[in-house]
Image 1 (spheres, rainbow, N blue to C red):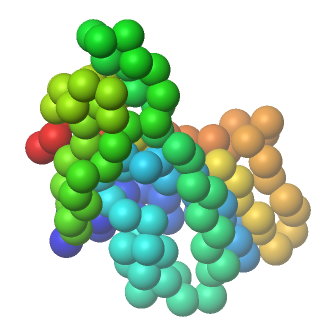
Image 2: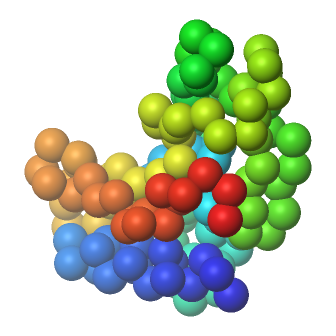
Length: 132
């Protein structure tokens, strides 16, 4: 269960804020775990939490001069295969959109936002490689 490491980190960081009611998580197009798998795994552990997903479009840059959204050719449980839509280069550089970021945590006593230091990139080194 590849997503469990991300889920554990999200839960750990969220619980540091207090009695959690809701979490908002930004998931990039090229994140190593699909958003729906992340939600399902979190709800398995923390059934009472509301989990909102913010989808983040990925941006790539390519040697051909293209900068924009990648062409995602295949997505499986833990793999995303993508390429430059202009030249079909299989190894464009990712600018953004491969992360899983805990953006906000709502707790029973108070509401904590990213400005309060809650924003946490839970991706670690995962997603740094183009196509694992």
